[in-house]
Amino acid sequence: MSEARSVPDAQAYRPPPDTGLAVLHVEDAFVVLVKPPGLLSEPGRGPDKRDSLLVRAQAVWPDARIVHRLDMMTSGVMVLAREALAHASLSEAFRERAVDKRYEALVHGRPAQEEGEIALPLVVDWPNRPRQVVCHDTGKPSLTHYRVAGEAHVEGVGTLTRIALAPVTGRTHQLRVHLAALGCPIAGDPFYGIAGDPSPRMMLHACRLALP
Image (cartoon, rainbow, N blue to C red):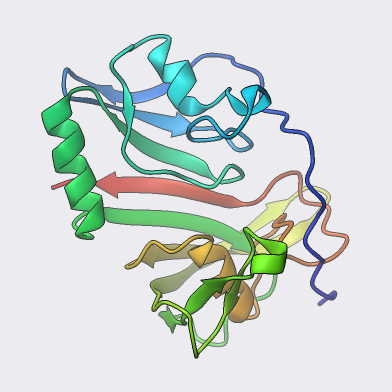
């Protein structure tokens, strides 16, 4: 395996073209969408980072409000509230870990065990933020359950291992750090991946949300 790549310099935000929203479900209380990779969940700092899933959704549903977030490079299922009661209820469900979140990742290497859990304390690496590091002195607990779900061949990259992930906690970059610590960095991850990775994107997808 190649050496870990260093944290990249800040690059201009280049969101994917707006080809329309991928809508999974819509009702008066909330809407469920699929966020494409490379798009912010909500606006960042500065007018150049305004384009986001939330802004695109508000062009259709002006009452849409953010409830949770995915990393910019992560694709997958997101729920947006459309009224105050739903926003409060959904926010509490995420805060109390009552939402069942499932992800899939394509990774380099293969875990020694076909399934298990990864429990590591994480803290922000301030000189290189938003990068996170494992720190047993000051880190906050984090827990992820994983299972090997097969293999996938990606053209120009090769054969990767497919990992099913069920995070219990929701720390920043948790799945990315956990898989790298397992010796199986996510393909295309610029922070925790391998140098010279030819992957066209970061191969992490939020595939399922089960709401109470």
